[in-house]
Image 1 (tube, rainbow, N blue to C red):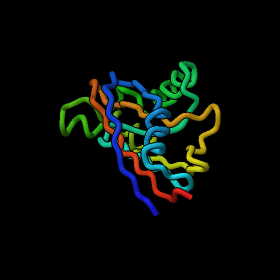
Image 2 (image 1 turned 90 degrees about the vertical axis):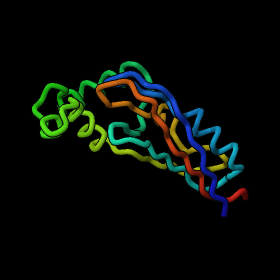
Image 3 (image 1 turned 90 degrees about the horizontal axis):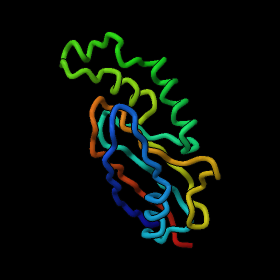
Image 4 (image 1 turned 60 degrees about the vertical axis):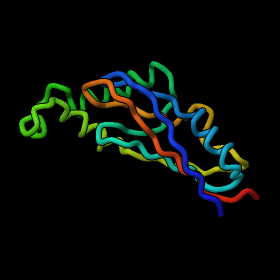
Length: 141
């Protein structure tokens, strides 16, 4: 059994910017030399999230619109009242989407479908440098 850790970092705009992590996932699996196993991704920060979606402008716009309805930027948040930083919506959105995801590794490839990409989203009210920790666990065959 092999465990391989790596990180991926990128600068994202606010309040909704996303990065396709497909190449970072492929690279982590290649570096690990694992052929069968699992890859996990974990986004650092309480206002970042990971999910899978078709990484195209229409799907991203639809996701942002859904989050705007569920957790509007201008709603009254106790977090804003306590800290005064205006990003209560960011924390709520990140909690709803979640900080992690995983996928099987089959024949040295993540088992995402053709129109399913792993993405990192900056949900904060300001630009951020975001880091994702990738861990590949498995066997080389």
